[in-house]
Length: 77
Image 1 (tube, rainbow, N blue to C red):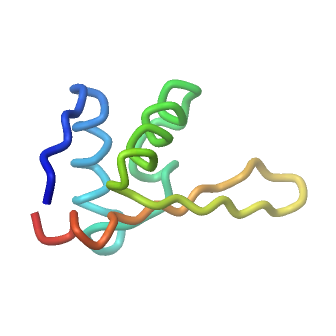
Image 2 (tube, rainbow, N blue to C red):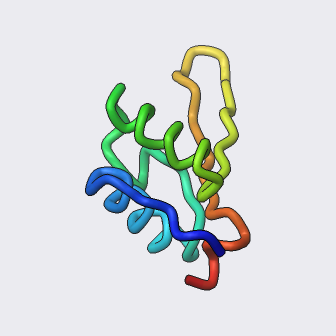
């Protein structure tokens, strides 16, 4: 696997996702980290680098909730 350079904020979010919510490697973003505009940008960067995947789920009357998972190659690092 190619080494990917991460900022401190990217590494912190990646570590939170690695720890997970109910199980390692996945969880709802709002339960893993403070959901701010900055966090959204950091998550987008991790997605672009191929380290995590993110899926948005929308229910009427609620903000979009994001489910995040480590990419397969990151699960065992």
